[in-house]
Length: 247
Image 1 (tube, rainbow, N blue to C red):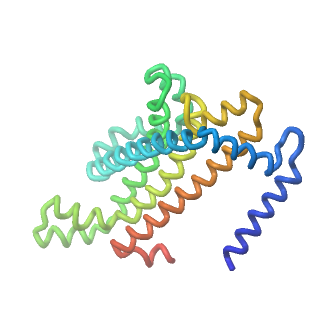
Image 2 (spheres, rainbow, N blue to C red):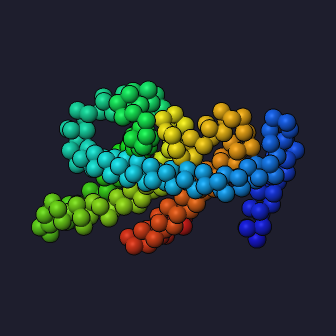
Image 3 (cartoon, rainbow, N blue to C red):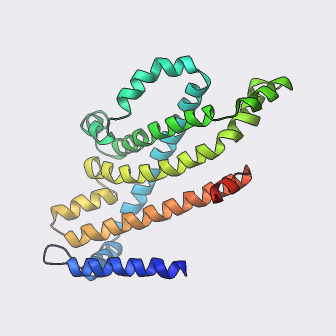
């Protein structure tokens, strides 16, 4: 029954789109034709491949760097306090604000987009990693110490499993942020990818192609969110957190 409701909402959205279409706003049918043209020409396949490549690298770098630095800050409060002004200054800056400098430093290509993705992902993951360590029950650490556990045993046996739920939740958030900033980065500093296809179509006044690529971006983002939601479920079951997710 829930799938029927979702299909009805999608049908309603298409109807609204059709009603709002005009000479300036292409209809769903026109956008579908443009999507077919992009697919048959190979431009869509190339754009998706290049975008996913940049997305994977940027997400990986941002998550790894944010998690490692977050763990360091969580385990070493004095280090966290020393770097707090730097983090507080850099965190509110939009990744797009760095685009002119990044393009000058890295040039045109994959690197500017990868940097924007990693930068956008880094700070949310950093803050959630610190929170994950702070939320670890101190009683569990005290019990482990009383049983003679080493620091490494405490980290691998107590701290990491206890913070795992927050970490995988941060991964799901990072995946969404990475996809959003990927498209923006490609629109500003790439010659390939889905973001570039939007800019190229705009320059050719092909608004039907713009809407077609936007729909593709939304569908891929939906699939990515579903994938990481499934991953979150599986990892949570592995560590016994599935009940918390259901609640």
